[in-house]
Length: 181
Image (cartoon, rainbow, N blue to C red; front, side, top):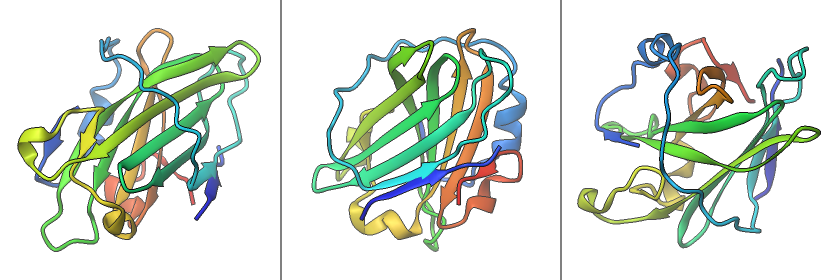
């Protein structure tokens, strides 16, 4: 199932996400040291989010996608300007006892003309003790229809720049991010 979404202009937790607080805390620069993942050529779900900012250095998410296979999920995002990294929040909002995770999404490639590509692969694991932010997830393909996704990106100065949400309940994370659907 291939779906690309166009949008108009870590750690794990077992609780509801307070995204408003997280977004308010994103005014200070931060650095992350995880390495980039290898690019996978597969593709399943995507959102085109085109309505970029006006300045050439503004960072806006223009496209985001995800895929799931027998190994796990991949997340692929494109921005205008120069994004340094992203943070992906996943929560199983369609479950009676939701599980949530936060993952680092590293820079994969960047060019002045094309903007930035952020990419991460999350291999599915069966145990909490095997969870690694930006590397593994407890979610399986069967969970996809109950997942709500939120992606935040940070600009070249490591300052929060933009966010989008999609999936089961995009309003779950609040109204500060654009709905990718």
